[in-house]
Image (tube, rainbow, N blue to C red; front, side, top):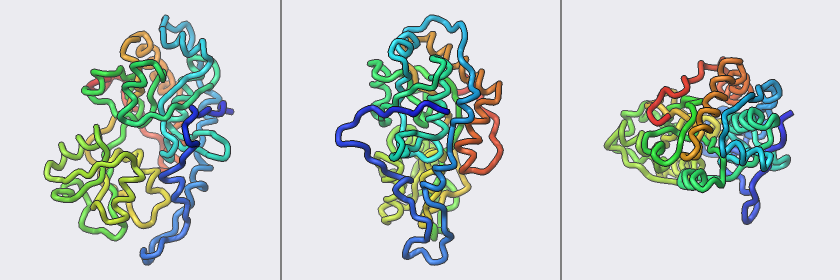
Length: 314
């Protein structure tokens, strides 16, 4: 069994938002004929990285690394992650356990480095991850973290370990938007950074409306403050899994290669983490993790993982 993930203390206690709070299995008022969807808690109960972690490898004869030394001295891997991305990193407030593909990746890396999946999650938004890595508050960032050349000036990236794309969410009744080109002239809820850049590159005449979280973006569409949402489809997949008043379109655009963010000042650590990724991809651990997490939402066989070092900035 996976060691329970410990959460870094946060002032004011734990706040759970997004998909977990959307736990309603029936169609909301005002959505005639909408098909019922399972509650978030029901979906979350099927998602687990434990099987993948149980059979995962432990690293042997690793290069000397100051980051690995710190991890071993404290006895746990500290990572920046999310508490509310269903399928990737979702907190169960009753147990304190975090489950999903990204949370599982942190457990796998901890086991590779320590021989046991001992981790502590530090909440870190898109505007703080680089600083947390730079001052060594965290060891790694595993948080649907898109690799870009601009970010690679500030941090190192291992990977990519997952390739997403930009997805589009609209109201369930909206038939006017079916693809990226239809976003021209529309108010589009998104987040700063890679998500906004992908939208502007693909649809220069779209009108970005910036929010801090996926849940806020989707709420803007539900409330009529935006016509659509564009974010990486990994985040949108879980966030819309229980929703009946919005829909995730089949159409996607661009590529969002997720990497493991690392301190810039320890190149040996990047070599170690890339070796870890290559190992779990080759021995089937990556596919087992995908099947136990994201695969529970998509209900499809695992894809081939992206090649390590295959994108600019990696």
